[in-house]
Length: 433
Image 1 (cartoon, rainbow, N blue to C red):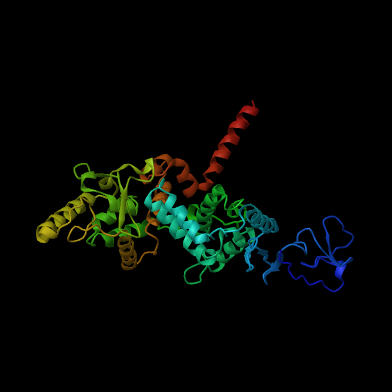
Image 2: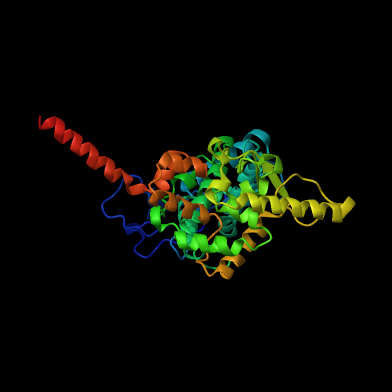
């Protein structure tokens, strides 16, 4: 066994030799350090004993680790071997020492368990998520990037609650790609994905508990209601006016009817009824690292038929014009035309990349002189227009492909106050006879 060198502090028996915690009149759990028959110091219950091959380490920021240097020399070997490991808790360090000794006693040698980094664990977890859509896996992968920049190279078993909380603080302070603060939503997404990866490590026994879920998370004020970025009605109409002169005018009309980017990018001509002036959302197309992916809508509510001509008169005319343009492009392209059946394609039939659509939206916002918002925030704008027009929440939610509960909690969280007043009035009538 390797005996770690532990410096006995001045005043020896008055404080812990490892952490310098005052001993006072406490006796229970304090282990003496002997020099011959003389007691020269003590270690407290939170620190390794002097005879253990473990040393307590403390960083400048106050983070505590336990460094193990244990003899793993097989019986009869001429060359001494050591195993080292840094672990987040004293219990984990002692368990590791016991594991080494047990392996040597039972097998005559100790083969170190291959270290799995946090990045490797997260990648393995992402690869196992065959139960969700590829776009969901893409979202998890992107959410993990800022966190893995901080702790991705560390051994999974070395991550403790303190490390997770320190990581969370760093993400909120400077977790962005260029050192800017990461948004509360992005921090939550990173922690949520990493917690699921550590669930896998917990199930497999690599770690005894999920420290990501145990760590305290900062409280964030969630943006709901009018805090969400959105246009006023005048800006929405101004954007429509300018977008109507764009080659993708028909697509922008669909966006202004409440379709998501995935809805528009995945819309097929077979789902467009020009006679009725409606489109039916049956598929969605999203951007992945390697090409696009087309799938069913992510929820039952997103599968819906939208009367686009009724919402924005003239939309059918723009769709007919777009269809005629594509027919001309098909004849001109000849054999190089790539038939997909999609509404939004380029001059040779190649489906437009979703991120290109978003970039084009930003340029149109600038051209229209309206508030630059995210493409998805057009849906927020429509939700507030609908609410202001007195549309019932259930009906507005149906148009946007939401549940009523999600619509209310997102766009009208104060609506409960009206219900409280109505309930109070009803109780007054009953109790007043």
